[in-house]
Amino acid sequence: MREAPDDRPLNPHVPSSEAEFTLDTAALRVLAHPVRLALLDDLRRRGPATARQLAGRFDLDSGAASYHLRRLAAGGLIEEDVERGNRRDRWWRALHRSSQHDPAERGGPEGRAYTRAVALAAAERLRAAAARTVPAMPDAWFAVSAFSDFTVRVTPEELHALKSEVHAVVARYRDKEPVPGAVPATVQFQAFPADGAAET
Image (cartoon, rainbow, N blue to C red; front, side, top):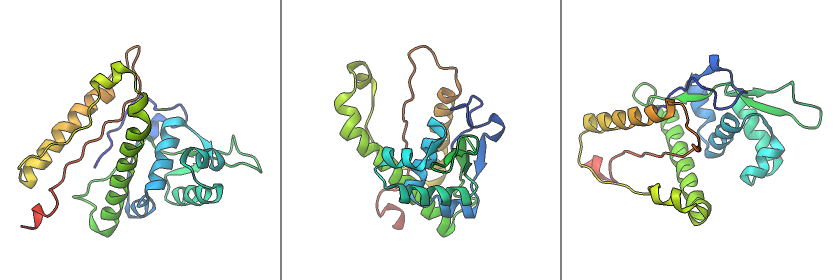
């Protein structure tokens, strides 16, 4: 479960020297909540924002957004942007452009809770795409989009190899210079044993 670093800024507010952050146990606990994952992702992609702005984007009340932002700050994932802030509105910015979590190195309850939150956040992005993106998508993008899943019969070692190959392909596209007409595209990939299969 690794987000590959990108040498080009996703936004100019996250310094290139802070490309990737390896999630420790404390950060995993903080991020074991889909809303916090979504807020962190938004700050990384769009740049600094206030709790009020983020609350509007994610249909939260400002108090809940502020609470989640304070938790992210306590976990070392974001910080207050003091150059933008004032007494009425505190601005927050991401400290890193991507996060890394290797479940083989840091599993346990925290790693599993974080992974569950990642899966829920991905499911929410897919639900939002089904509700809003698909109906309004231009024909050219609809023709090349994919919403599919596959069943393969593999061992744990083979699943790891498959995952690594897919990540390498995504990294190749992620690291290339964008050409005119390129827009951000969400690429989701899930790989896990079918329900109950690993118990036999």
